[in-house]
Image 1 (cartoon, rainbow, N blue to C red):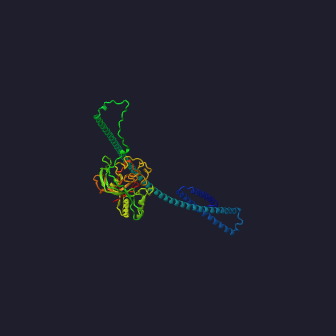
Image 2: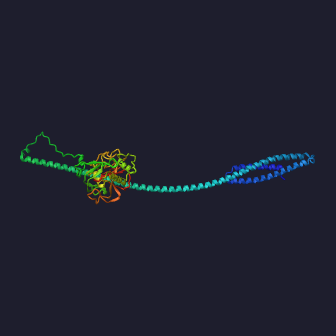
Length: 508
């Protein structure tokens, strides 16, 4: 049977093992190791329970010994001292054992808490594993999505690169065409200058021959009636008569002279009164007449050929391009949205960012307000008014000059930047402003690819492709290649850009 001393020694050994187990459990790095330590702790707990049973038996023996001590005190009164000493040692051992039991009990409780903690750790580890698995799945999906986005970006980049290559190629072609056109234009101008000088030289020769003929005729007449004068030697003091030079033509001589029969009456300007108050745009009543429409047959611009004679009836056209001030009144009274002015200002600047339909609606509103028939100008009416009898590139001549209009190279403060207020430059011979530069202008005409088949009479050439509308004039961004009164453009009627406006016509 196990003695108290052995129980004590065994208890101490169990305590040491428990302390070691507790330290190892705290240092456990994984749930598996913690589970293994928990298993060993269970075995230790089983041993502690066995030891506890043994100590309980010792306690029962002690109680039995105490009971027998009272009844058999007389029998053991003469017992030897060795027995009393043994009992004393047993009592002392019992106290120590009780303390050890209490310590083991506390150890057992701590071990139980440790096991619960390990279970929680295991549960937390399982939750963490689940979260990690979900996180890994989300990361996989995100990576796949980013890879798809990357592939899409690569494809888009390749498409943009190909588009840029196409645009560069187109730009190169356009640049070469523009250079070729400029070279041809320069050559044409040089030919014109050479032709002019050739004409002037011929004129000089003709004048010289005429003068020489007259001098010979005079000399023959004098010789006939007074031949002795030619026999008299000349005076040694006389100076030779300088040869008379023909007059030199000024720069004005190179300007093309108008072949249009200009009206003897002055141009009439007027404004129609609006029913809702105020007045419509300033209108100029132009006389009917004939003019050469389009570029000459040596021009490289096929859509402006062939040049042909056109006869028009009298009509009225607005002196200025329709302004924001005039269009905003129409928009406000009809509840339409106001067009964007690009931050350049409104009032007297030409209205921009309006479609062909917007411009047509404005003419219908003028018709209802004034009782007179308004519409957009036809292509031939516009060119007749813009040329004002000239046959040069611009109504003022062949050279762009400086500060005569608002274009890409006209030398104005607005060049290439924004529109100028209407009437900022000199008008043409019909007193129309901004027929070169500032903004392009819508017309009522449908698109014809050239003037082949164009009628000689009538203000409007019917037919054509009405899904494209003719736009005339040039803008503040236009350069020399497209800066001329014969320039034709065509746009979709829904086009809305900041270089395109309009002016109006009243049918008389």
